[in-house]
Image (cartoon, rainbow, N blue to C red; front, top):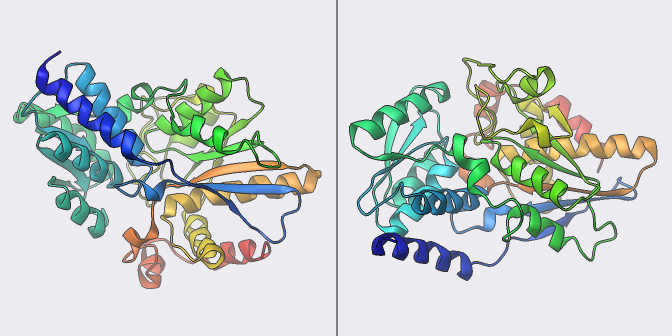
Length: 346
């Protein structure tokens, strides 16, 4: 192996070895009886989001497949968090990084990408990101990381401390150690693919429910079986939802999907803050809204068990968007009806 590549792989593995696992904490919901909800807090990664795991896997995959060499410029299409994490790893191994992001990306994420030495290439909307990234990488003889293609194959879904193995290990001593369901939103689809495959590989009696925001085609593709669906709209929930069916999205490992209104996602993170005193990103709201729908169904049937989902990133990145009432009224709409539905659990 090229000595520079060996050194780069070593640096990334050393960073992983230094890192502790993320916490899985029990979310106490007063009116839930016999149903335990858990949030795996991915905001505690060095780059502050679930995408830290993905970025590490993508870099190792590309390095070990001979795609990145000394001096290679990395290009990525990202709505923010993946770019932040990839900028971190690019700086770690000493290669340039350019993020292709929509103009609507939160300013706080732009600042973080630049903090880690990354450069920004803006496009008008999410549907333009992929083609613009290919063109940019070709024009500078760089490498397009392409998270939406490689996310599901870059992660070792059988184990190796992936997020699925971590969840099940951390559940060992809980009242219901094998979750009834794991609920996860889809951006690339890589995490849901890892979860679904791991569940099947270990023959767990756990179902995987994937939640999808507005302006995303994953839900409709899952329901119709049409993998060619395309939408001209961008998701308003950063980090999840796509205008086309990405290659990493694996419907065959999903047991069910729920379409979540964007206003419900925002209402849920405001409700969550009241319970735990912390802000989470809107994709966490999408996840948790789905969990509460499942919990309600279980309550009606008299079922007991555990439900697990993810806190994908911190809400501190979205103070000027999802936590700004004026911004929410303009871009999302009235969330009060969903807030009232959530209040019944208090």
